[in-house]
Image 1 (cartoon, rainbow, N blue to C red):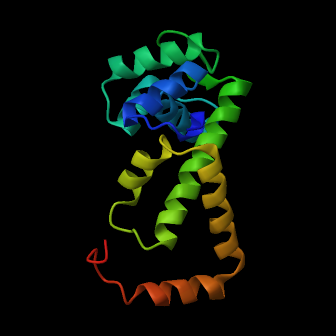
Image 2 (cartoon, helix red, strand yellow):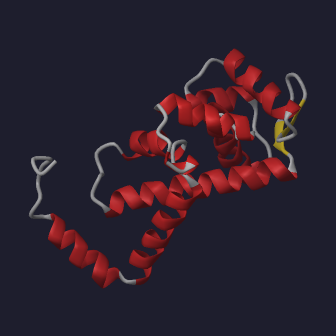
Length: 163
């Protein structure tokens, strides 16, 4: 069996990603939200961030400090949170990933829990799979008649009984 064919538990894949130096899913969530919040003014604050993520300000402060230590943010206690150039680049990419996955879920008709499903998927997808999904989303954007045909086809499957 080739190395890429070796099975792991879900946690095993996550640990493998961390060994490579990837951000944790929680770090990604914070960076993405900081990017969203800072788009308008170029900065955000702990209270605004904590409210947007439904966490305690103390939790937001700890994560912001971690992200600042990793050079994604500039933060001084009780001050504003600003993204560094690298933080801005990663935040932009994370937001694009989120938006692509949300649009993909809409295309395939999964509309009931888009935000929740997007959050669950976005941290657990390979770059290759995300690239393929992005291509499909762009394809349907450029070919609305084909999207309509696909959506009409899906009408005949009203439940999960085929699974």
